[in-house]
Length: 77
Image (cartoon, rainbow, N blue to C red; front, top):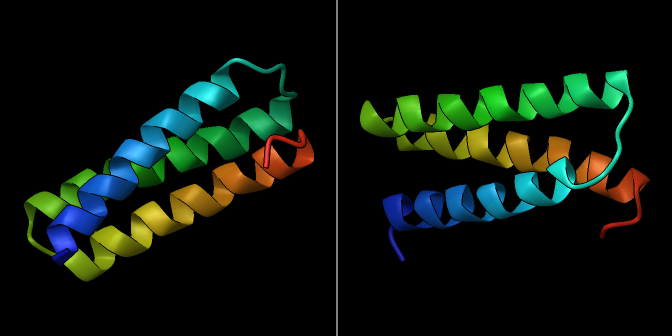
């Protein structure tokens, strides 16, 4: 699997996980964290189009980490 395929796989996983988060009740602060995760996901696409794969991968990884924190708080992991 090359870098682009790996990033695209992580983007798909992010989309699945964000839907899971949207189905639960979160408070305002958690909502801010989710919004940050969405922003990092958008950055992933931006850097992927620029062919800056390292930064793109870093963005999606960080986005996953933010969502994982919320998922952990709500025992979804």
